[in-house]
Image (cartoon, rainbow, N blue to C red; front, side, top):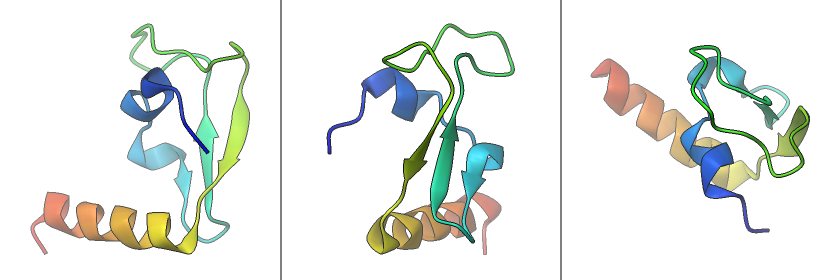
Length: 65
């Protein structure tokens, strides 16, 4: 499934639900930048096990673990 670049760029760590493997895509980012979902509405995007593995790795790199 192809994701809109704005949705991916605008994704914040706080919007990822690792336990339920879901990304909460918002209409706008909290810092008022203009990234929007394709539909302009909030939605939940399911994340694969592989996506969660990659995100957890990136999170650990970001934290310097």
